Length: 241
Image 1 (spheres, rainbow, N blue to C red):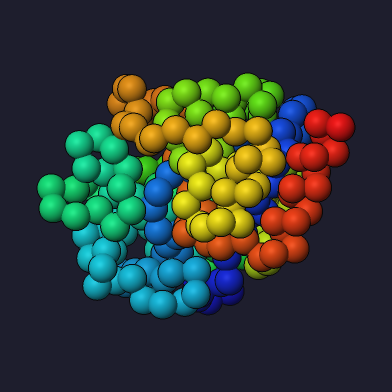
Image 2: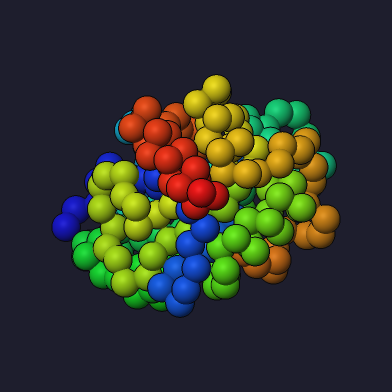
């Protein structure tokens, strides 16, 4: 398979609190969804809508060009930090990193049908993982407890991913996101209240990001479809009834 842009998998915003051994969790930060396609030694960066990000993230493209790996498509997040705090769009004195959470094509082979946990094992060997290229970490446990920790630490949210599932180019309930800090307008704020989450101002993580599980994952500044919002609100109300 020739490496090329692939429509990315998207998470569903929900009030659920997943729990059990079939779920893993990743931190959600305020970055830009970014797919990297490398073929013939040249890297092309794309937004989830297939817009070129090479000019915007030239340092990330250069870092991927310099890595010996070739013939791959990986999915991740371009995240800018200012004073240790993730900030959308970055700005002056910001540090830019590429946090990668999935692999779609490697060595010309389409690995999307593989289960999530197998794709993660493949991803570990794709790059050398030198800054600014980082692989996200995952945590297991109870979703409610992890989300409460995310609230205390001022995270933007939490992503839950179901093990044993393939990568699909659509919005899927195998990926769920709980938003701690609603940023997408009134519909998200209504869901936030229905989920029983307290609003609080964001602050920088209390310690270094590297090595603190769960690490980074962000699904972009996507807006909810009205049907997704209504369903999640109904779920939250039913859970409290």
